[in-house]
Image (tube, rainbow, N blue to C red; front, side, top):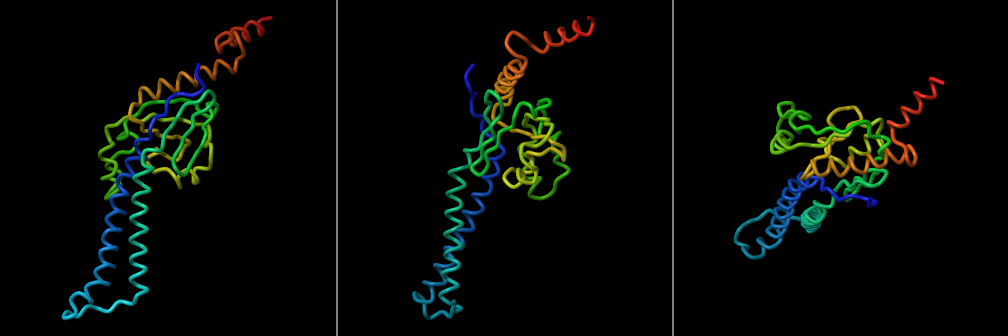
Length: 216
């Protein structure tokens, strides 16, 4: 058995960044064009009276536009770097700003649920509804945990609200091929469970042994 499985890309993370980089790119282009216009037009067409703008204001607008442009490039570069990967004793969730290991000991059960059942589209309005609608029919793998690997508020700083179906310790993982991820994870988790009962034993044999001992 290999030490780890395949990396399964987190669709939701890439989906959200794909939305945001377009906004930041648009803001950057507009601000840079505005700064260039305010700096050049009064010189090129002096016959028109443009509002005089202090140099420091032009530098602030230009700097903000450049920052937004660089942020867009960064978001494009990291949008596909978030993934979930099964290991021999845990799941590893990686994003450009977060790395967390979820021990199999924490996982109570797993299930596959359509996003529209976890997050009913009608519950949301405006931007959040528009973001959720294209994902409604996709299937997520939901982990029911006996506790968070990190405080929930800390996870919420780096993950979309659509990772959290409710206030309980549950995590929704949307990947391109949920069946492959589920099988990959179940194989590693089953081997880990078997290893906890020692060589040559299994949960069933341990149960039978405990029953025979109680009868003596």
